[in-house]
Length: 303
Image (cartoon, rainbow, N blue to C red; front, side, top):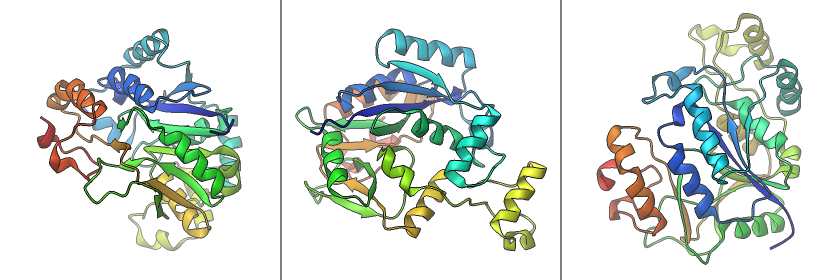
């Protein structure tokens, strides 16, 4: 392993209060890496988009209590609020998009400014980002982050790296990686200096109801949005994907079955009840046969 440093940053919001006291200790434990810092980035903004209809939305007080428990238990080193100061917003958007944009979140309520904030405020060479609902397995004698950093140091066009998506199948290769020109924001490892060469990102707006407006230049759409507060800003994922397609950079999915991730979409009482057992099974490398090769957790296979 080189002497390059890496920090772990995890998003938390009011929508996560029902599970984060289980998922975050789990993610820190299984990644098993000497992080320079383990940080929770708290989204304090009002919920918008589909986040408003999520089940079990906690209060900001409940979220603060959860993050304080994780801090006191030494699971994380620091808890920081995403910086929504107007000057900061303007400054980092100028760097990452070359233009002011009124919205801090995409149309679904995902924190675009928050994504940028974590990258900008991290002090390490590398940043590993996880959304707080992710689940992961890693074999005890394996270290996917070391493997990923080594690959990134050897491949200057490798912009993002993540572990295998979903538990392995019998066909899963045990070495190297698959190349993609698409990006996923739930988990990624990046070299921060390299990411600085990758930006600025293209600004992308969702289609308007008034069809003629879709033909307007992006710059005009952005000006109109800033003036009116209307318009749907597309996902950071989509913008990063578009930038990957414009450049020689790519995302690598490691194919080593010694580390893999699962994404649970379910937020039902049945899922929350089953979660401790699901985490225990995943940490032991155990999973239902029908989950093999599938990235999204299949509820009926687990509980």
